[in-house]
Image (cartoon, rainbow, N blue to C red; front, side, top):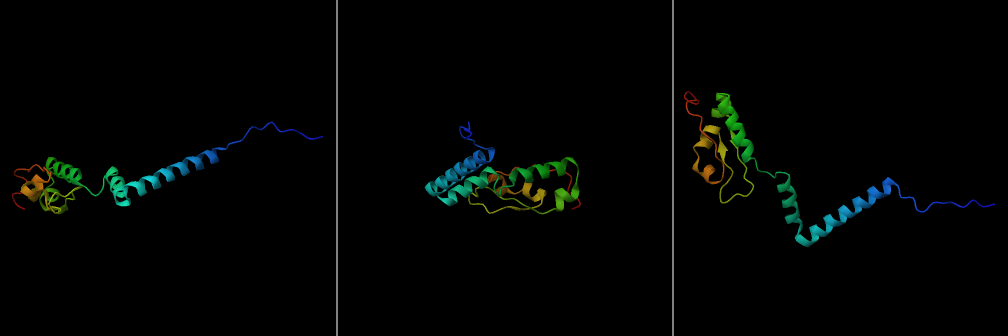
Length: 121
């Protein structure tokens, strides 16, 4: 006597995960080929923050000033990387020099000067 199975189609979780991953890879490939791979990588890197560190430098200099950290504000060399350099190369220098750098200000880096902190440096 044969036993009749009452299965209507088992779909395991592993199968669903593979289907979803396949769709994601397919969308990724279609977008990459249709818009260009360089454009795709720029979008991915800008989404994650890219190479820009303007906000990080601004915050670090502000904290160094508020904590009266003379070495961090007056002596530590920093390199500012802009996401889209509009004719400006990356600015380098201490927080004190970046606060007085007009090129950095026009490129969007507004570091407040910490008056009286770097007198002996």
